[in-house]
Image (cartoon, rainbow, N blue to C red; front, side, top):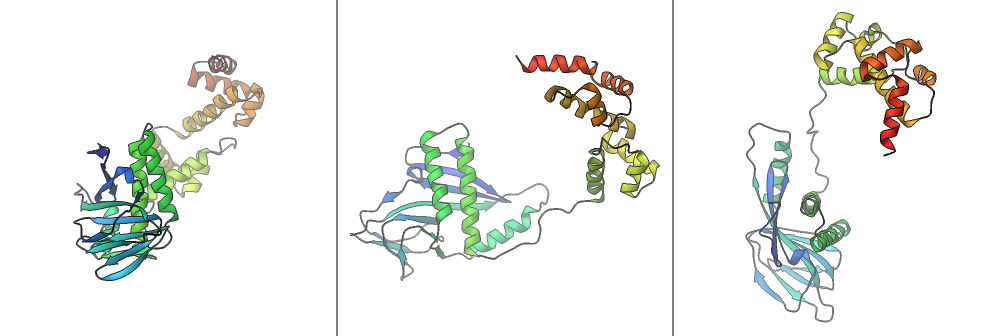
Length: 299
C-alpha cells in the first residue's frame, strides 16, 4: 500500500528516490499545529523536518539557539537533542514530518547508484540545517493537506510525488551547488541511426530513395536495407508507403481536403498508385475510409 498504517493521527508513506527507499511519517495529515507549551530537550531516531507556518519561538539545538520564524524549514538529524521555547505573545504554528531511509538492493547496476551514494553521504553527515525561504515546501504541504482531506482518485500517488519533491529539495538545500556528472547513458550508434531514420521518414512528401537514406546514415544501400529489416521489420519502400498512408488517413478524417490534394500532400505522384496502396493497407478506398470514420466520430 502506498499509504501504510493510515489512521486519523498518523500516516506512513513510502517514497523511492534512486536506490533508496524513504519511510516518511507525519501526524494529523501534516496539518499545521499551534504550540501551547514549550517542548523540552529530546531527540529522535529519525530525521525530523519542521516547517514554520506562523508565529515565532526559539529552537535550541545542542545548546545553540536558532529563531523560529515563518516560511522557514528546519531539519534535525537522528540523535540530535533539541528543544522549543514558545513566544507566548506570538503563538508558533508548524508542520512537521519525520523520515528514515534504507538502500534498495537491485538485481542489476543502474545509473541511480551514483546519485544514491551522494544522497546517503549528505544525509549521513547531517546534524542540523535550516533555510529561511520555504515557499515551495509550504505550497507542497498545502497540496498534501488538500489531498488528504478530499482523497480523490490517485491521491496516494499524488502525496508520494509531493513528498518526493520535498525530500529532494531539502537534500539539495543541505548541500547547495552540489552537482553530478550526467547519469544518463549516452546515445549509442544504433540509437542515433534510429533517430536519423525516423526523421528521414518524416519527410514523406519528398521523392526520397533508399540511396538518400543510405547517404544520411553514411552506409551502403545493402547495410541500410539490413538495418531496416532488423529494426523495423520492413523494407524501405514499404515503410515509405505505410508512412504516407498513415498521414493520409488522418487528413481524410480531420480535414476537408480533396483526395487529389491529399495525394499530393503525402507524396504520391499518381492518384491511382495512392488508391491502390491505401486499399492494400486499410481494405477500403480513400473515400470509403473517410465516410466510415467520419460517421463513427459523429456517434
